[in-house]
Image (cartoon, rainbow, N blue to C red):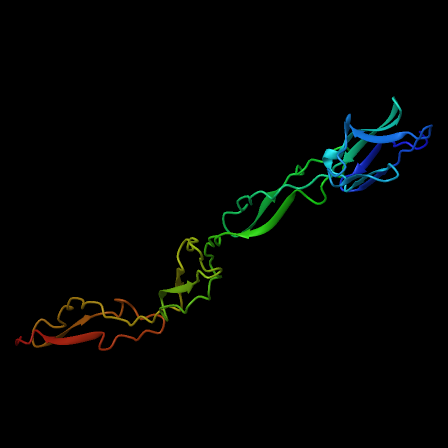
Length: 258
């Protein structure tokens, strides 16, 4: 043999050209075999034996891997040289699986899908699949419930009484935020109250009951007796009015002749 094929590792789909030449007398007949089987001149169509006895594989396929022999025959004598073809098969992605459920039951989350580098698996040193086996995208389910929140308290109202003890009020709203999408309303009351005390109210004076009459100033011939009352029931206070009328009254008594 003057030129012989060599063991070769080649990528799937590549072109392989193996040369095989031999000398002798008479000129040797060269034939090719794969795994001990000869080639059909027209099949498979991507494999050809060229006029110079070279072997051409145009677009190497996975099933082309194996042991090849170039055999030189002179009369009844033959000799063969062997070369092994290894086809490097790059990995291929499977179809994407179905999307996973969304990671959130409400609002915005993520969902995922996966694929495998098994269509085919990388083989004989072939490249693994490019890219990622994972894909993700945002997913949106129903809006999440939003519970209501109280606003700040408003200012106190004026006292309900201008004097003495009354009440004052303040209010707040369940709008920070408003309840939404089935969220709970704000706990508690929107109203607050407290006692308030301004200046004391004016108290007008009132008379007490009359005291008993005094003893008559004379036992006969006409005298005078008195009775009194006081402005103490209650006394005037905080600008209230004094009692109206007399504090003391008199009456004629013992008018019989002596």
